[in-house]
Amino acid sequence: MPGASRSKTLHDTVTVTGIDKSARMLTVKNEAGEPRSIQVPADVKAFDKVKKGDKIDIDYTESVALSMLPPGTKPSA
Image (tube, rainbow, N blue to C red; front, side, top):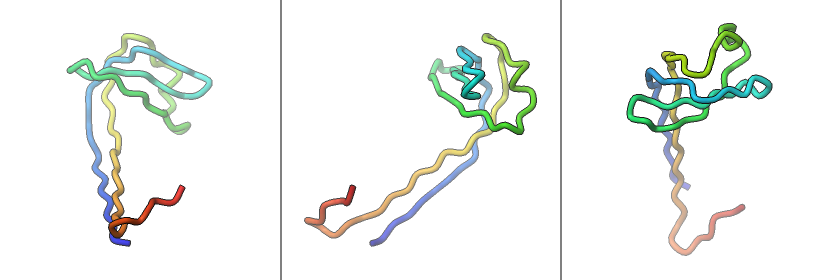
């Protein structure tokens, strides 16, 4: 089954719009107003200091994977 995947690291400056401290999740929006939810790793010590409305710089990785099946084949669950 042929397939491919791609990943790239991106940088953005975002505004914090929501914080879930117990789940270590931030909701942010970029300068275009597009929302995004971010899982913050435990090794990011400054997480406890982040406040709603803060502008922060983030680096994140986007990935996509694609696989092709022969014509007429149904994908498995």
